[in-house]
Image (cartoon, rainbow, N blue to C red):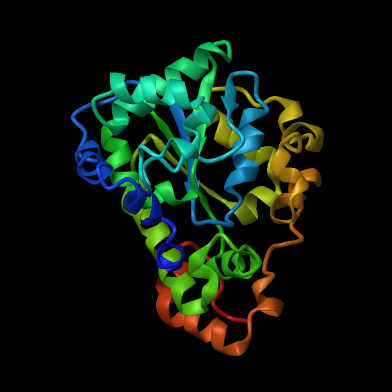
Length: 285
């Protein structure tokens, strides 16, 4: 009873207390990876899944249907997380062979890349944006695609998503959105980082995707914007990701104007108004 009332992130640690110290050590890695990998990140409900799937539509890339969450604060050694879709036995083998979290990521990605014609892996975990500073350091050859969406729209969407604890109030979510958009702003001059605004992508997907693919070093392929391509994901059958089945459109842009009440709007502006303005979002409404 007591365990069930705790933060879900803590439960695996309590069930496996022997992993606490090893988790700490693994999160201070000595490994620097030379992997060519793409990290897609941003505040939850920013459109990261859509961008992941659109990039994956290119012949040079592949991804998994899910998030690794590897650099978040969950127990690395909980095999029930099914890292990279690997079996329990393979995960244990990778753990035994690896020295730290970066080494484990590197070995695991190289393994699944072999099964996918050595294409480039797309890692999509929204909250990894909070750890951008470390990821840039440990993956110098990686490309980082940061998705930014008006935080008020993110909140409007997150309120219907039970797996986002920060969506319980405008105050909590505004602080979280601010926490997500600050690291990319600090690294905005880094040549390996590309920031894509959700609103601009949904307004003019073709030219925005062209620019993104140039950043990634490829020519865009027409099929990447075909709903049959980016909708072939099991998540598209769920309510939270149903728009993966649709042609890209602006129907969810500025939803906050109708969905947020007066107090929620003012709370968001008070906490994250400066950051909204910095990213070019209107404060009126």
